[in-house]
Image (cartoon, rainbow, N blue to C red; front, side):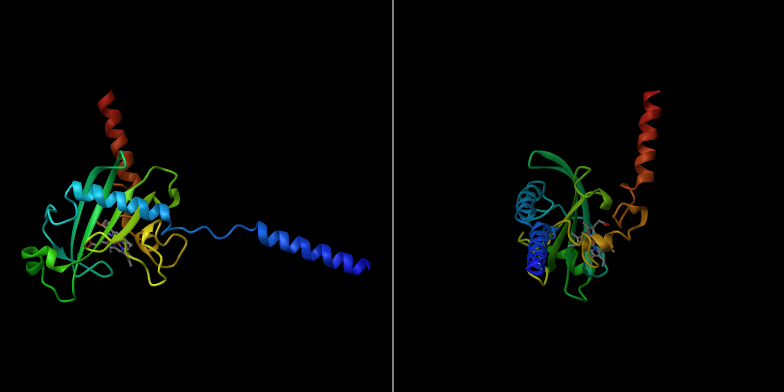
Length: 198
Ligand code: HEC
């Protein structure tokens, strides 16, 4: 009788533990992440960073996974009423496409847009607070093979995806093309501001 009571109590305790353990939080592709991506697309369009009236820069030969020819453009724009630094990468293909061909007719070769947005401290502080999203040429949020939308903290705590790869960028700012957001550069900026105040 006592044995049965102990077994029963154990089973109850186990069940409670299981039900109290929170489900693993989804790091990206949530409804909120996708909703932000939709707002962001409208703002990117307005500022001519995407879409048929996009400002054009000089395309250059790129590397995978982004594309064979790339364009990178950075701006500070208003999204949902907040000023945000955005970096837009236009990815062109297919393999073998020439830089000149893309320069002559960018929309024809556009394969995807990959975008990073600097969020406020606390969003993902251990990864420098970047929000990532990948869009089709016409602004649909693309999904990974598991069917999860590529928007938000894409690849956080995983072996593959935007975050683990961008973590290797020089300067520890998660940006490959420059180090303007690295701690060293930010401190130099602060020092310059300090000098001006003198
Ligand atoms: C396997 C590595 C890798 C993955 C995965 C990756 N990137 Fe990148 N990314 C790079 C490299 C390398 C560059 C620099 C390419 C260049 O301009 O020559 C870059 C550049 C960029 C830039 C321009 C800013 C910068 O870092 O120079 C953006 C924006 C960007 N990636 C967004 C994304 C997004 C969004 C994802 C996920 C959907 C992603 N990347 C996944 C390697 C990666």
